[in-house]
Picture 1 (cartoon, helix red, strand yellow):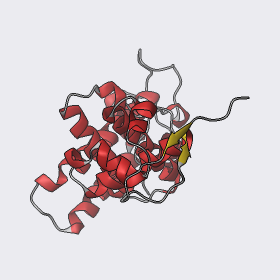
Picture 2 (tube, rainbow, N blue to C red):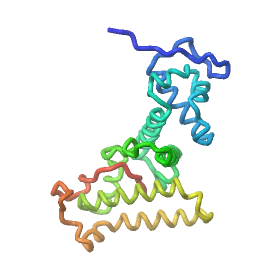
Picture 3 (cartoon, rainbow, N blue to C red):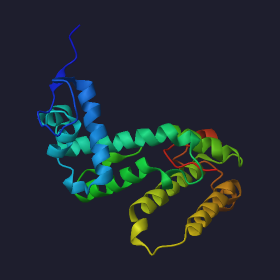
Length: 226
């Protein structure tokens, strides 16, 4: 069996301490983790490959070998942020995605990358992830709903959350109580989905459904709440 590939460590004296060589899997994760740390504290355009290499202790050409480009590294950063949030989704509180630092960073990073010309398809959320399971469990507490209702509710929740995470700071400052009231309204809507879908005629399967009803049909990666 061949030995795992290794990457040369950075020779920059400002880099984090490291061995002369770093195994490729460790180098890859170190680059991702360092990029995330820098994106939290620096304007996105200032997070260069040179800075990432310097702070990670991994040689700069390793970024190209591991990812192909800085843009591809940032694609993987967005995926890593989604995975981190998904791991916490089952224990999320009512504010869920709106206060999660990883999803906040992901939403802002993806908005910037798409604005810079990145393909939006690269950032599509996992439609069968752990947070979807958490949403199913919460929906089940309020009665079964059709697959269509669950699908539409999930998309509405994600779009609202991502819009809040990206654009909230561009709106007039409101007291914290307003955010609590927004969440109360959202959860009230969620709690009455069974009645709402009956009024809308969504409790019957349509061409996009599998034909079954019930909360075990919901798909998507959405925020959860109490």
